[in-house]
Length: 210
Image 1 (cartoon, one colour):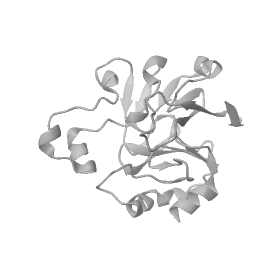
Image 2 (tube, helix red, strand yellow):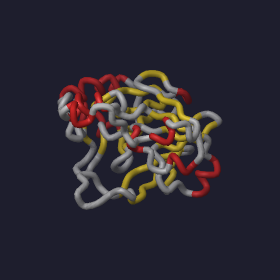
Image 3 (cartoon, rainbow, N blue to C red):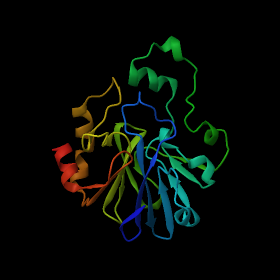
């Protein structure tokens, strides 16, 4: 764990579901950030004890980033999980194969186990503003109090530097995602905190979105 600046911590942990067939690296990033009186865990996995004791809530950049959210016992603020209709649109799946199915992502939270708050793009609690990435539930979270963004898989470093990641989506192109995220360049962003890859800076974001 390292403190990037006062009140902003980063650490990397091996993801328990990773294997050699995955296209993303085994180590994933998590963050703890002081926002007012709260200490928020972003996409948390293997939270250091000293931060776990201080944490007041969990924020997920995508529903499939739940990682340790369930076991932490904190309120969870998250985009909603995919529906079967989303799978049809995003991946071109035959509707008859998935009709009526439900995602396993955050099923426990949707069933009422724990305190869950589901949000899409737009204003969030804690002064956060969420921007849609490749889809409305894979987000880039703007934290104006520290001039930083926390990014889900849409904007990530899978080993070749920060870039747009489509993850097999059929309904959107790289140029589409760049256009969605380009308004970020109008913000005074200094830190870029991806869920995959090391923290980076505005220059890296400008290279991706220019």
